[in-house]
Image 1 (cartoon, rainbow, N blue to C red):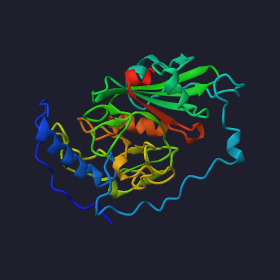
Image 2: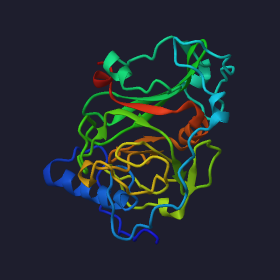
Image 3: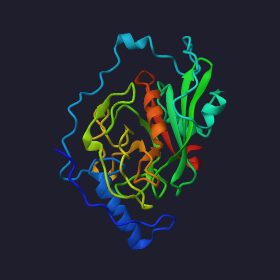
Image 4: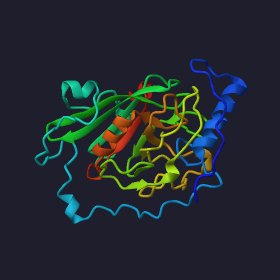
Length: 294
């Protein structure tokens, strides 16, 4: 069933801080417009279609074992050559990839949460606990160290970050989460992840700074916070309960803060989709810089 049409909310002037009832009204508008899809922290709304019938991705079989590399410190099989990303321009692509022996900015407590088998790690580092601005880097484990595949600007939730995310708190959850499923309104740009193309990813209305929300969900990657892995990002299953929010995605930047997701430019979203490889068991490590450094 298609998403029920919702009239656009009234504009919020760019550059003005929202206070009291104004921020509550803007948050409600964004929750209604984005929540109808279950994306960007929204919960279920009557009129959403049933979850996609796409089956969960099968578990890795014996043929996949040969593709796996041991974690850092263990005996490593020969690694694929480190290739420079040429899909979208950015600071890293201009100077070529680097090799690191350890992941920068991540403290021992944060690293302890990363699964031992994760050989592809997306790190989203917020400027501050209350900031909506962040950077995203993609790292891939090789026999020589961690190869940096991307380093881009990003946006997160309007109110910043939290370790205890709840629906409509306008904060992005801090933690380590799997990346197993993707989708969008537009055709698959070439990802190795299961991809659910559907018109139900369409959205409308305006964001917190008066920007259009159209095309925000042209491309998305589900972040496995309070969701069932192996199903479409549109699936509304919430293992922790509805109060803890859900529908936290990577999606296309609409020019302002998000409800709880992480957004990137369209070119960088398509590049991220092409990079993510389920054989490398990708995860995202996300939060403000101070929290991740612990």
